[in-house]
Length: 336
Image (cartoon, rainbow, N blue to C red):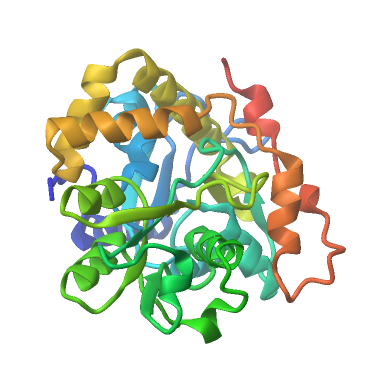
């Protein structure tokens, strides 16, 4: 897999950042602010954002980092890979990161378990492209009955779509009808299927297309089985909105600029995917055509889909108001 030390910061960079903050506090210094308490626009705000893995769903992040968009917007962005959506949300709740780039379903699951203060500040993927990929002997979802299969970690949007896709295919209770495992990382799931441990797995681009090129079959596209449903975008916490609003605004502006750039510059976008995800040109072109239609620049979500994500959680009594967890002020203030 392609490696870029700027894109995947090491623990030493993170430790250094904490040390810098500690020394600043010890010296009695503070970040320059204006009279309203907001960070002065002449400074370069810092945000720490976590993502669950290398895939095309973080393409806007890769594009913005590679092309210098974050710097152009005046934002210092620290990127951290943390496997598992629940772990990312927990790290956000603890204050060790400022933003989570995950599917909204992960936030809804956290709220169902009692998390508070989480806010969705934009949706830049209108759906989460994911596929049920199976071995060559599987022809229908019914053929998976009693078989070992794997989806993403519990509480992820991949899991929600995977379960619904199996139900629509005839397996009314996937956990009882199959030997289902939750496993983080599409690369891990694909490798386990190659090793003969699973008959079917959930994969998102480019892993699904890579599996197909190796003789496995895409049995079902699950990205829209719950349509309308929540997509993917930045999730933050109310304390970050209060303390670093300028940084969040610049982050939203960066996402918009990145997606515009991706649409306008296919060649550069494909090259970045080849570098970061170790894709050959043909596969990179293929996943570009899959992803661009589900990316939007305005960041506005479908409220019905967001509400549906909340209501799908069995812990809820279906009285949760989705709008209480949405903050569109950054979208309204962004320059289009």
